[in-house]
Amino acid sequence: MPARLLLIEDDPSIARFVEIALDGLPEHDAAAPAIELTVVRTLAEARAALAAGGWRLVISDLMLPDGSAESLLADGLALGPAAPKWVVFSAGVQEERRAALAERGVACMLRKPVPLVELLDTIAGLLREASTAPAEPAAPPAVDPVQQHFGGDRALFESFRSGCLERFADDLAQGHAAVAAGDAQALRRVAHGLKAVLALIGEPGLSAQARVLEDAAAACAPGEPPPPGWEPLAFGLEGLRAGRFAA
Image (cartoon, rainbow, N blue to C red):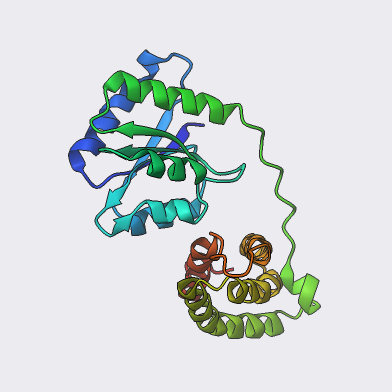
């Protein structure tokens, strides 16, 4: 199976340069895996692609038409054992900012314009690291929420789920407000409520995200800003409401 690589870059010339470089990766490094490249050009497209998951490596410009890629990193998308490796392009980064990016999980920073050999060496090396990383634990077997929580009564389940989807609008508003206010404990309360509800309606992945966010927010000291993790969870809630991820 080819290694899926996400390129977040709004400059068509740079995107084309990376595509051409990757075409020559097998000749540069015979051990390199086959690559499946996807290019996105905005923060919104990148957020949706990252939420879908399955990436081995992410290469990203910092400045995009609709914002900074640092907001993605602030959400914790380059952290954790299952997160893809990240490479950041930049025309120049001060040492303090470089250290902050590294703390958020960036594996490598390349200065634009990057020499072809340096780009290929970096990609090949990070793909090797990713391929030797410990395997993710197997997902638990799927459980039918209708049978588990509603005694097999699908009509009752559908009615409950429909009401939950409507109330997600309030949860989203409260979560966004907590993040905007820098209130970690308010965000913890939102995540706590969502954790149980999402499990009941058969969304174990989103429920797990809410649990992780709740635990991280609970660990915040008074006055400390909320931890990353709300944006991916909010994206999932919005997807459920819009029917993108309907059960």
